[in-house]
Image (cartoon, rainbow, N blue to C red):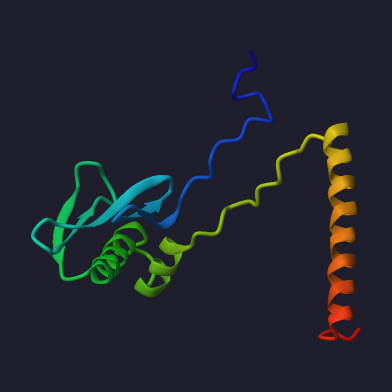
Length: 145
């Protein structure tokens, strides 16, 4: 068995960033961590759980809607994670979901003989079906090439 740290073909799922919806809950990911949960409470309000800096520094807030909770959370976290930046730029940086480096596609296996044979048969069948269809349209007078 190959060790996972040295095997180049092993690929993990991409690390989420930005807002991700999980059922009826919205989660804000930053730096590989969940820092915000926005979910509907049982009483009809919306609950926002913020955890931007330290695991023990959490804050619970009740807001009127999911959208309001997301906006509040974006500003609260951006102000704490990027204190040196202006708020608008900090929010944009927090929500930037572009991956750091593009992932190259996984190498595929070459098609087997059976798959190649099936592809040729399907191509021949689709050409024959198209010809029959065009002939039927021409004979009905509804289509002019």
